Length: 198
Image 1 (tube, rainbow, N blue to C red):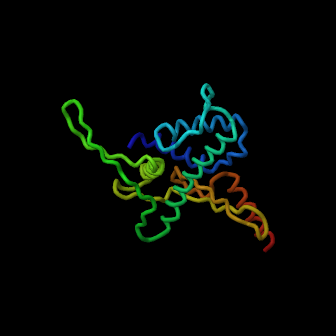
Image 2: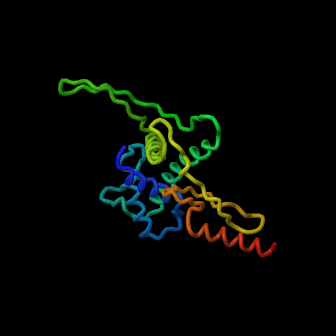
Image 3: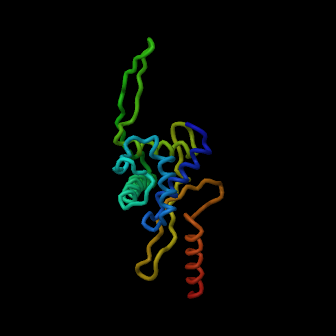
């Protein structure tokens, strides 16, 4: 477990990343997102396969392939959050992510060591779950998911009304109910219109 402030910033960045609409990003914003994605997640996670790059070509290029790749990483992380959030509602302990571990015996310099590490196919899921645990309040063995929230702001009008559904991390003690100011205003505006009608 590293610096808790750094880990919380990393978790907040990841939550913001999974809520991004990658198709709507301008080219410069997408390139910034690629750099941050690489620095925040990709460097330490071998299972994230980078898109194919021609020799001599830079990874930092806004192409449809790179956007598809970023959306696939986004979908993978979003599914982890969804599994954890949905299972949290239940009363019983529910295994939502299972990890197989590799056990290695390392020998060198006259010493022997047994090392365990997650399987490379699930190391992104393990890293995200570990980060959520590290940033959640509680004891070393059990952590509370009270800071992981889902936005319930209304979207749309009439019968097609849905809710936002974006995840957000409540980083401060003050209660936060919406993922953004836009959703908070949207909700308060809808409540005011409803009160006027009544």
